[in-house]
Each structure stands twice: as structure tokens, then as C-alpha cells.
Length: 108
Image 1: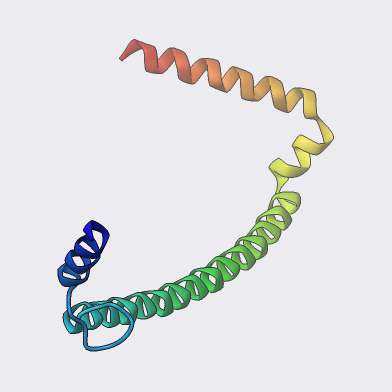
Image 2: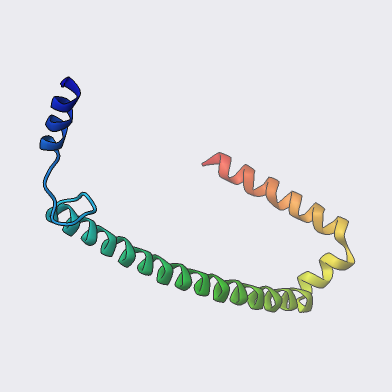
């Protein structure tokens, strides 16, 4: 008898639904709205990712082209040729220039 009373009480406390899935019309509308929002957000994220990947690829290609151009210019310059022909002297000159610059900046 007590189990029948408990069963009747639990059945009466459940919300009444319009559909057999156990949710109210307001919850269904909210759920549908949230699903649409998530779908829209997913589409937007996919477009953004595609755009970022395209820009990254273009930037990488541009940097490679510029690197080749600068390397070519360096190899053709007098300084580039001198550093290749006299690497120890070049390192000494760079060291001396660094020391001079450091001493000038410490004075101020």
C-alpha cells in the first residue's frame, strides 16, 4: 500500500509534457535555439579556421620568397663576399664594433 502511494506521488510530481520525450514546450524551444546557435558557431569557426590556414600559407610562401631574395642580395654584396672570404676578421670586426657601441652607451 505504501509503495502504491509513493508511485502515485511520483507520477503526480512529474511535469506534464506535450510530447513523449519528457520535456516541456519551453525547454524544447530553448534546446532548439541552442542547437541552432551551436551549429552557427561551428560554421563560423570552420570559416575562420579556413581563412587562418589560407593566410598562414600565403604568409609562409611570402616569407620564403623574401628569404631567397635577401639571401641572394647578401651573397652579391661586398660585405657578404668579405665575410665569406675572411670569416675570422669579420668576427673580430663585429666584436670590436659591439665593444665600442657598449662603451658609448654606458657613458650616457
